[in-house]
Image 1 (cartoon, rainbow, N blue to C red):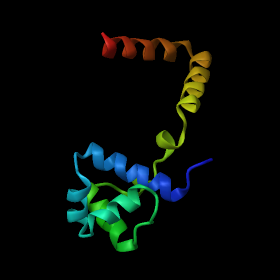
Image 2 (cartoon, rainbow, N blue to C red):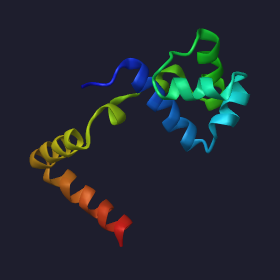
Image 3 (cartoon, rainbow, N blue to C red):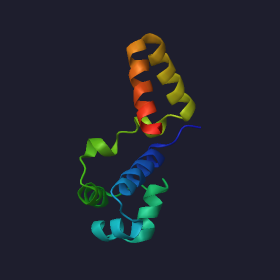
Image 4 (cartoon, rainbow, N blue to C red):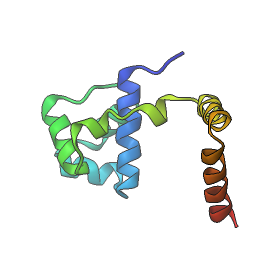
Length: 107
């Protein structure tokens, strides 16, 4: 079953929070809400209120469009593999470039 908008938004907030090295407690403090509310939002149980939404944007130092960039988290690993394989089939240069990057980071 596809994830709901609340779930996608929550996953995206959690993803950005983690990239920023913030705990739920610290984010809640910056947004001036209770820690359980951050958990409820991240778990897709609640939408943030307008005030909380603005607080999240400020605390995470992001633009609204960044919060709704769901492409990478909405696709399953199988979807990502299929998309990449199709791209590689169409473009040998891309395949070779990605292979070079892969070798550089795995050696």
